[in-house]
Image (tube, rainbow, N blue to C red; front, side, top):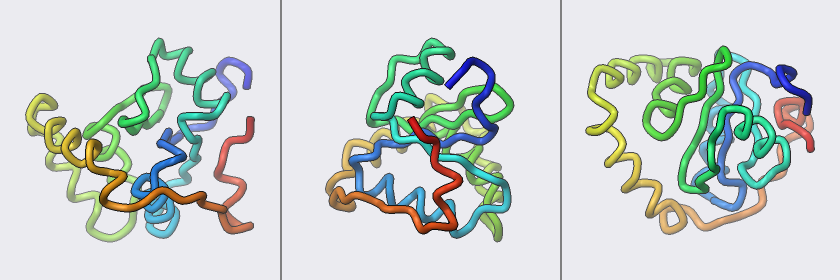
Length: 134
């Protein structure tokens, strides 16, 4: 993927994590914005995140919107803004300082494999367009 060719609203997630894959399916079902997805283990993720000088951590969700990269709880709250229903209301928690939000995120991230066992998610044909290809 060439520099500056990445689409907007990319969710970078742990592709080997069942909880993370379930979260991707949830976003696809509730999206009001167009989201794109890239497993952290992919070459696309490595290239894009390297441009933002990020050392990939598999226990972290990253979200790229308007060339600004968010991680952990900030990424989750930014993603919530792009969902339908009442989920955008969660963005009110953005006023809570990151140093207070991220420990809650970290607790979930540490236990994500226990919350939902890993599995390989195969996107529906109509959703394949939203997954970045290597």
